[in-house]
Image 1 (cartoon, rainbow, N blue to C red):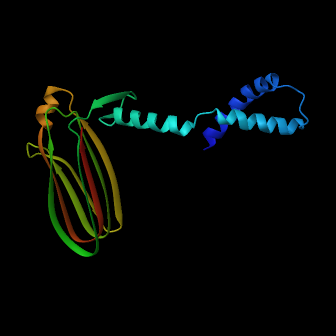
Image 2 (cartoon, rainbow, N blue to C red):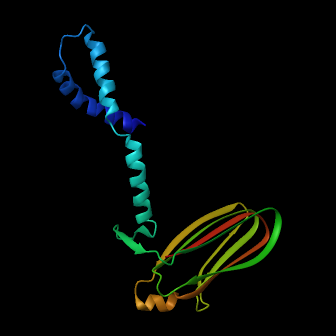
Image 3 (cartoon, rainbow, N blue to C red):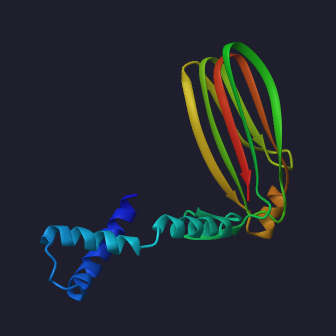
Length: 192
């Protein structure tokens, strides 16, 4: 709305003097009334900017819906092909002491370029352990917290080389175990 008002004001600054020159001065209206009429007349000829901008933004959104910008550690941006994006997200909250043993799986295809892992957890009591295993069965990361602790951990694994693709392609497994825990865990895996 502010943008539309600003555009109208700018156009009026350019259109109003031209309209003022083209009209005769033989009217009995005050200069202020004449300016108001000129403004109203100029406004009639303006397009509704929202009707122009909104469809354009939808078109841009559709064009970029299949792609994602990502920042690498070298502070440059890459446009990734996201034709095979997939996300696995799971969250569990427990207000009473719980012993939980769960595992979740995520496929990482050879055509995909990166795996992003985001983990957050809080153990107000007890212990929460989260283990991530690579497709070859080897442990990739183990995170453990207990009473009055919380954690946030993020990592992006890039598999641009054939060596990395061999090591990372396959089924990744996330194992969560809690012992007499009160709190929550939240794990999100995204492949691109």
